Length: 164
Image (cartoon, rainbow, N blue to C red):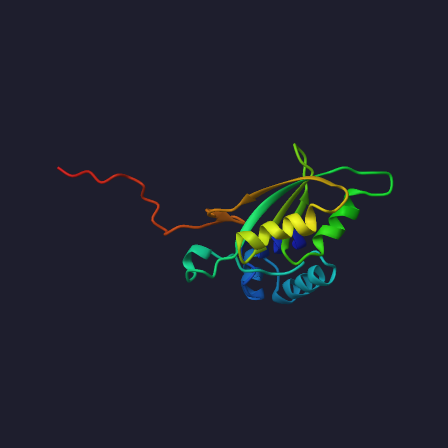
């Protein structure tokens, strides 16, 4: 594995680690790690760093409403998937957008303050795009794992109590 891939693997696991910690795990020197991270950021390989939030652990009412939306599209000679993706990705409500294989074309994750806000966004901003032929919205009810991080109370003992 290349030094860049080694550093990327460590950053993906926990991006808050210091250059010294990354150097220890990869066998590189701190200056090498710093140079590689700077290169990865300046080249746009690393797009940003983010926190993974367990919204169940946050105060009541602070959780955003999240939904996954299936999008079907019809292309014409002048319009490509990239054209449609660039148009949709500009909306701040869109948290992720992926072209996928299967029964629909795009998988879009959106966030809003309420179900109504998410619903109006999809019906007023996304559905009217001429190439969009169908949307199916699935509201996220609860998350058990996000980006490789499991949520829960930390008690993995699911055995039933037995009393005499």
